[in-house]
Image (cartoon, rainbow, N blue to C red):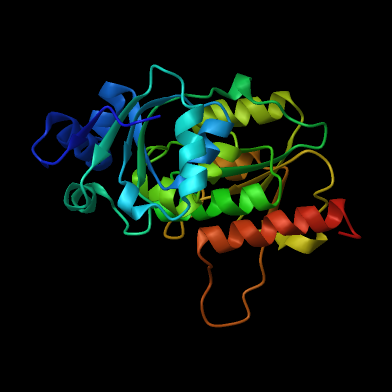
Length: 271
């Protein structure tokens, strides 16, 4: 597929909209679009059924020309394609290593009822996460552990924040992710008999002494305030990671990885 036209000015309305979508969550909500940078990330996005609206390319920056051409040939006819000059691309690309590919993608809002869970489901729940990079890193661990879903309760960042998409390296597309209230999530888990394990220091057991072989939701809060009382009260069990140094907490993404792979170890002892 050949680009429809070359955009050589950062003042072009299409370029200005692209920048606005990157920078403003209100713009993303209003337009129903978000931005994905990088050939690999765009490929992940397309593979799981997201619909591209517009693709911006810069051929002089292609890292893998064959794969980029394959992506272009596979696009539906209603996807708009524009070529950017290197100067304009430099202004709109958040990172320098995006292989000359940036896409505007139509948003898709999953609901709790849309989740397809295994009999021994493994779910990560994050309450009031505020740093997109942390959520992106949790999503990467969830993908690696083959978790069924990540549920973000009362979120303080939107799921299509560019920093989140970048830090997840496409895992936001491979792991079903839902935003909802804590009340909705607790009700959803309890109705399905899913064990709720809350990560907390108080009144807790060591995580490796806790059975994670059945359907399990690992629930974590922010590093600064931890979980709210509604989660502590709804918990099946309280778990903790032993802290042998002077500090009393780990980054939430590190904690998530430790707990997820304990569940993997228990379920697949020979893995």
